[in-house]
Structures are given as structure tokens and as C-alpha cells.
Length: 369
Image (cartoon, rainbow, N blue to C red):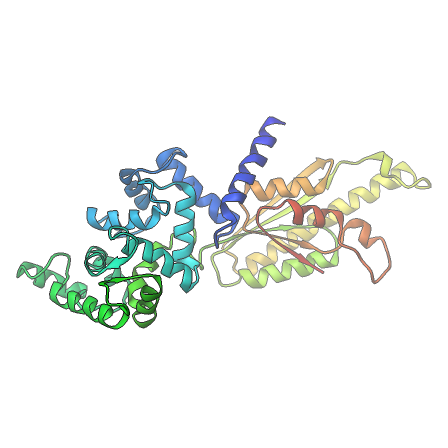
């Protein structure tokens, strides 16, 4: 019981952390594991932040201390000289999937961190110089940030560090200020910085380097299909199979068998017939799962797993336990419950199991009618 409460408390904490992001709960869980592996759940120091960058396999971000400091500033949203998990999620979420307005505000925080809440010419030049490798890897052209094949020859001639032509980059910054510093005070406020980004979107090019393997749009996802004997379950599986084809996603099929309870026996049915019908339904679900597995293999699904959970008192909680355990991204099932299928009516209602899963799952839930 205590373990179950602890798991629920953990999921509530993660769900709360997810609320203000563009991530799914599964993605938040993956990021949390990396975060705790580095700092054990406390706030990240600058040195630990470098370790996390490596843990998240973000290439190039820790190549120089200057660049790492700029990235740390980007993620230190509350300016506490440390990065907590909420800061990390917020910054990664905005870089990966944020709106232009969100990305502008986040970049403004970094560009203006050392100039009193506005972006000075000096601070913009400094940040762009330090982030030159990230800008270069993004493929966006910024004057003064030299292509990788030109960097070594320029550096060996002593023109600049890190493949940067300082004169050209300074001229680029001067042009931005000439066009966007509308009050000519030598600094860009939020409206002026927004104007600069809209005119020169390359200023945000570096953000594309902060998409982790756990948050990439094309990352492999794990689908869980709860298999029963209903027609809508077959339609749910076909829907999932269409999404799985040609991708590296994985499929987990589960059959949950309720404990045989004599109290559910109809008054006029013999115990033998009741047990026989129960066994027949069980066999039918297993046969359905086997056919789903075969179809998935034929369709080329990268990974297919099957599972049978027997003798449970309630089906819904058992399905949710499986979803949590395998860290499912999507849970799919049929629309109608057992009670719904017993009514020969057009008004087949959402079954209890489906309703329960919608309320308690910490992943996307796909219910097919």
C-alpha cells in the first residue's frame, strides 16, 4: 500500500511539473531520470549542469566554458545561480516546442543577463561570440560566424577564436541596433528585441541544439493496447498499427483477466456454464492478442511485447499499473465496456474501464468507438 501511495505521489509531482510545459508526462519522466542521475534531485550547480548536458547527449554544448556559461544563464530562469528541475523543463520545452513569443522572452533573458534587464550591444556580441559553434551547427548563416571548414585557417592566422570574424560579427550587431534601437539609448528592450528577432531570426538559431533524444518530435514512442473481445478494440488496434508502420515505435499488448467471482453469476446460470463462458472469453482475448501480435510483426513494427495479467479485482487499475510500469506514451483501447456490449442499443456508453483509464492515466489515452 505504501509503495502504491509513493508512486501516486511521484506521478502527481511529475504531473505538476509538466503543467506549464509543452512536454508529455512520459517525456518529463525521462528528463527527470537524467536530472536525478546527475544531482540526486537537488538543484544543479554550474559544474553539474555541464554533466547534465553530457548526460542528455547534447553535442557541443560543453565544448567551452564560455558557451556553457551562456547556456546555463539561459536555463537559470529565476536567476538563482542554479538550475532546478522546473527551470530545466521550462527552458527545454520552449527551445523544443515553444511559440515564437516564448522563445523571444527566453532569449531576451539570456542576452540581457549582464546588462541590467536590457540587451546591450556588448552583451549581444558576447553571447553570439560564445554561441558561435551552436549557431554554426544550426546551419543558419550569421555574418561573422564562419563555416566549420573555414574556422581552422582563420584561427591559425590569429583573426579570431572559435571560428568568429569579430569585425564582421560586430558589424552584424551594429546593423541590428541601427534598425531596432528605436529610442537610440544603446540597448534593446523587449519590444525592440522582438523587432530584432523578427527581422533577424538567426538570433534564435542556437535553440535548435537543445532538443534532446527524449523530447525530439520523431523519438520512438511506446504504445500500449488493452486487448478485450470488443469490436472497438480491433478498431483501436488498427488505428495504432497505422501510426506504428514505418517508424521505430514499440507496441505492448496486454490482456487483463478479472478474477472469477461467483457473485457475478446470473441467477439462472449453472456454475459450470458460468465458468465455461468465463474461460471462453479469456481464450478469445488471448487469441485476439495473438492475432494482433502477428499483424504487428507482419507490418514491420520494430518491437512487440505481450503480457497477460490474471486474477485482478479491477481491470482499470491493472491497465494503469502496466502503463506506468512500461512508461507508455499512448494507451489505446475500445470505447465500450463489457456492460456496454451487453446492451443491444445504439447508445453504447463509455465503459467503466475506459472511463477509469482516462481519469488516471499519466499518458495520452486513445479511446476508439
